[in-house]
Length: 174
Image (cartoon, rainbow, N blue to C red; front, side, top):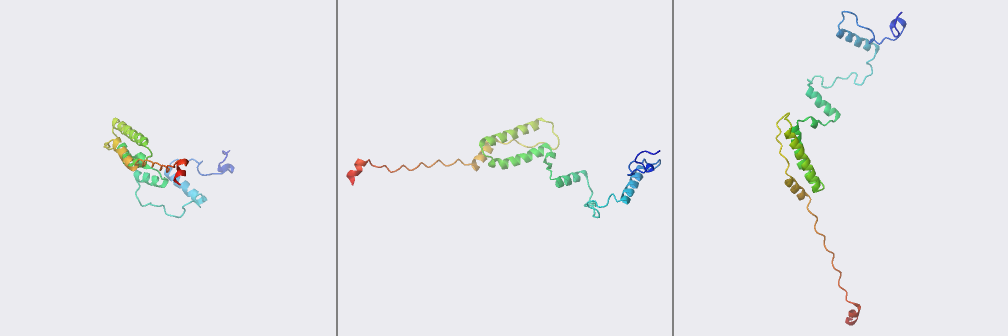
């Protein structure tokens, strides 16, 4: 008596339930299953059928695969940079964005945060290229911010209304 789902009792056979015979290599068994699936039409109508595989001639390294994946998915690879390069880029971006901040307090907070993270990076053991990034000078950044945000001009005092003469004096002049 056969098991349920085997060809002996009329059940379906998908090719994956049969055990390979002794003496067959696994690669041969896989090739046989692929040929059987092609004969059944399991690969018909798939997206990309009949079209060449793009960049098949190009040698693909792990690095190239990561770059292709990042481009395809729109991922940001800046997190994969070594700490030194990441801080150098951040320092450059921060210096460029200081004039866009709204208040001096924001400038102080951003510069203090960057300098604290830089100090922590110097205290950790080095990994990757040497860390050669200097701290941001708070006073220089505040001066750059002040140049971009001059203080508003003092308000113009309203003109004093013309002094009117009392009514008893106006009467005499007329």
